[in-house]
Image (cartoon, rainbow, N blue to C red; front, side, top):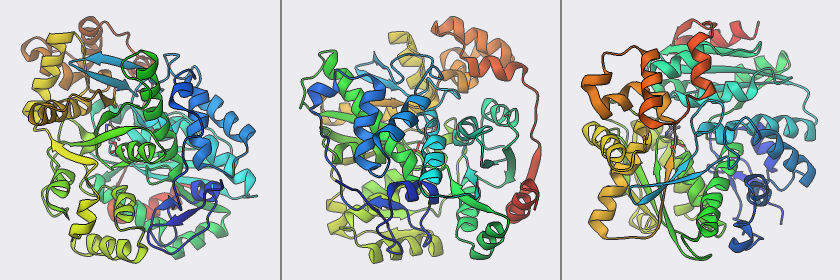
Length: 496
Ligand SMILES: *Cc1c(COP(=O)(O)O)cnc(C)c1O
């Protein structure tokens, strides 16, 4: 079955998967969505016997229908190889009564690697298929992890440039150092004087800026996006939820067909939407539990039906979730509006004009698969401490947001369905906060470098290559810019 894509705002339709991957965002500012949901061709039983790559092919080929089998398998094989430090690619770890799906075994030790290690292959394959000869310039706003993972993926990929914008002071020291030491002749990093939403809004405006796009085209350049709005990021993410399920079947925890719940620490709503897409293609998922930190705009949305970004932006210990405009929610809004693009567009206009919109009771009724929850900072630290003390398992603050929300959900509902918690970052990426939670008096006085060794002792987990690397790599990027200067910075970096 051929799957075509259309914009959530109605401005484009009948777009092939490879075109949607190339374009990133639709020209009307909408997000590409499949015109219908395909269904898994292989039984859950058979999926449980597959390795990660073969299973990923089964899932991704349902959505990326204009890629040939050979093309797609080559993309998958190139992405999910020894760059990952475990052969399972996305292993499950049982602790505290749940199954932590470790999505941080890639190059930059956060879950963004799961999609961004394949996106460059999907994109360059798409360019070839569509006879594109322009240079592709990836523009990316990052709350910390996307930027590094995208640069690692696109580093020195022929025919591409990548420019990453991050909020100055809004990312962790490890995240910042990872980005500023990025190698590659085609990688560029800019610290923006603003928060993540400012950076993301700035990038989205540039994508929609006709003059700027024409100016680029006259230099043989076209923009694309590596943000989670790109369908080429969403689809690879659906694969690991199917893989988690398959692992539970293989391990005898569940029988094929039994339901599982999924808990996802959420920012831009990409990761949890991928779980929802996995459910749409036939994965038996019961509840999708959306966990927010103190920037709980999504919790409020699920509780009230009102999305309101007009509130203080809080910097937390889970910076990759410090987001007030969750871009991918638009894809869910479109579905619960019964694929009504005009309605979706008007809600999104209300969001960009006044920072707020309210959905109808009919739309709310379609959200019953979702449960919203949030965790306060002190709870996040307490959860890290508890799971370490109880099960000797060390989790990062993002994952701890999810674990906290899950704990509360289970106590409140008594729902004992086997539950997968998306574990989105290695504790090494947030070593200071993690060790603070475990024993502040002992670890707070240590330097960053001492902390990595301490975390090794505490967790028994080997120091990842990504950490070894930043200990010694030289700083290569030092640009700082105002939001209003983004276009000029881009011109300068592209030599225009
Ligand atoms: C990006 C990120 C998230 C949030 O994921 P979304 O897809 O934006 O909801 C959570 N945790 C970590 C560590 C991340 O890097």
